[in-house]
Length: 151
Image (cartoon, rainbow, N blue to C red; front, side, top):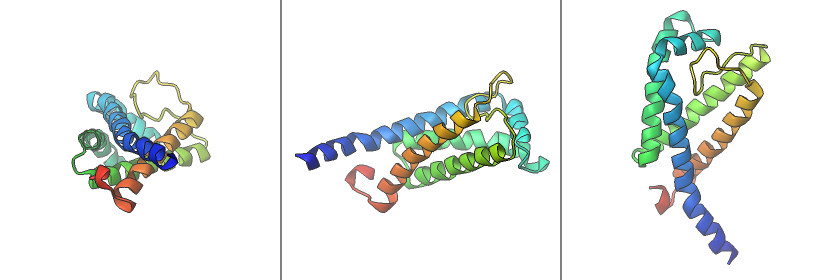
């Protein structure tokens, strides 16, 4: 009985995780695609990338997020989209932690490029950690314990 309950939960957990993470990436890309100059300013404020890479990142990253989200939602090319989502989320998490350690309290630009966006770096860190847990679950399902539901 207990195994059947766990199996039923797992049956819905995998597609649910894909849908949630896919929607998060699509939503995250939306405002950045509409306002690349504002997103470039946010990237500049992080003070990590050389100036030559800021505009390129501001243009490329939202499209990568959109493509990753669409692939997660559709279930197409899952190994690649799951891998990219994990890499991006871990990268974003590390950048937030790094800037928090440096004492920079800036708007993360995760879901909005608005200059009125308030920084809640501790909340962002907790939120991104939750996203990483979901992404790691997908990584395990796709790469470590692939089943018929993950393919």
